[in-house]
Every structure is written in structure tokens, then in C-alpha cells.
Image: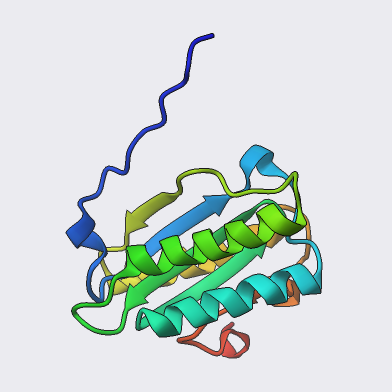
Length: 158
């Protein structure tokens, strides 16, 4: 049987240090639907917020779709380690899933890209927030319950 080799991360480790915003998408293995209720969302949000605090990072936005998670993270200081924050979130929630949900786990890696300008950041945040609308889950993004930010009060946005 031929093994499929997974790609390694393309960005250098130092890219993840500091205050630049980076967008991430984390998928559940096999695109299993899991983030569909308040308790699942609240547990993962609690772990995310704790790791953000521990690693001195902020989340411009986080949005849990049923089978994946969108985040835009940035460090709060020049030495904040965004990658370590994200990896610890994945490790802790992955351990939780392995103990409580045998058929649910994170994919090994994640998608990421650097947001290079303030304008790009705003466009990207609105694009993420409209994912549930594009998926036909709600008709207006503010009606989707599994979102948050440590930077903005999203419900003040238009």
C-alpha cells in the first residue's frame, strides 16, 4: 500500500512570532460534523481563550463551522508565539476528543496565510463571518451562534 506523504508547513517558524495577523483554518479529520451545539462550542472556546491568554495572543475572529474552525490570530507583543498558541489549542482539544469522541479528531495540519494589510484584514474577517450564510445555515452572520473575538464586539459591526 502506497503511503501518502503530507506536506510540511511552508512558512518559517519566525513568521509566527510577533504581532502580524495570520488566518488559520483547522479541519476535523474526514470532515466529521461536531461543532453543532452550544456545549461543544463552549468547551473549545474556553480552551482557545485560555491558550490565547497564556501565549499573549488575540483572536480578531474565530468561527466554528460544523466540521472546521476559522481563526485570525495575532500576537500582542513582538515575542508572542502564535504557532505555539495554536498548536497547544489543537493538542489540548485533540486530547479531549480522543478521550470523549472516538470518531472525531483534528486533521494533522492546518491551512494558514499571512494577512498583509489592514484592508485585507477587514475583508478577510467579513468573509469568515459570512461562511455560515454561504453554507445556507443562517441568513445573516450575526444569527450564527458559534463565533467570537477577543478584539472586537462583533455584534456592533454591520
